[in-house]
Image 1: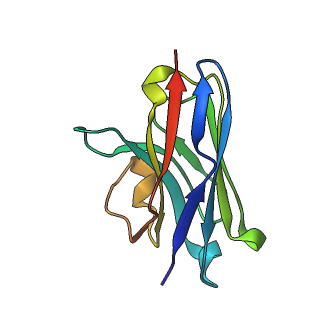
Image 2: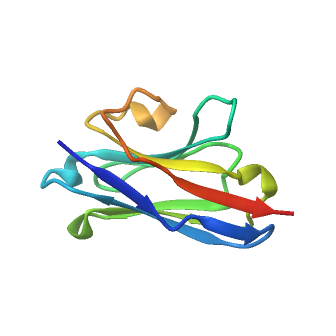
Amino acid sequence: QVQLVESGGGLVQAGGSLRLFCAASGRTFSSYTMGWFRQTPGKEREFVAAISWSGSWLSYADSVKGRFTISRANPKNTVYLQMNSLKPEDTAVYYCAADTTERMRSGSHFNDYWGQGTQVTVSS
């Protein structure tokens, strides 16, 4: 069992930066693929980024490539999402996800564990 807790969301002006954190419980964190998704009211949850258990591969949605960076620190049971050059359309609730497979690499929503989400609001 893995529990995920996101933090780091907030209000930022367009062009600004935020860093999201996802703290995971459980001793098997290092064996999970980790990722970030986001959702706005009335829309489906959208894939943002994913990272393999070892960090050997990274995957990004086209909408965030070159602006967002996902990373992880296995000894700290933490995954990060550095978000730069933020745009109003990045406004959403951001969710952390964990999965034992690598299907998140293709943006799969069928993940084993989800966090509760953290709100990111980008003002124009």
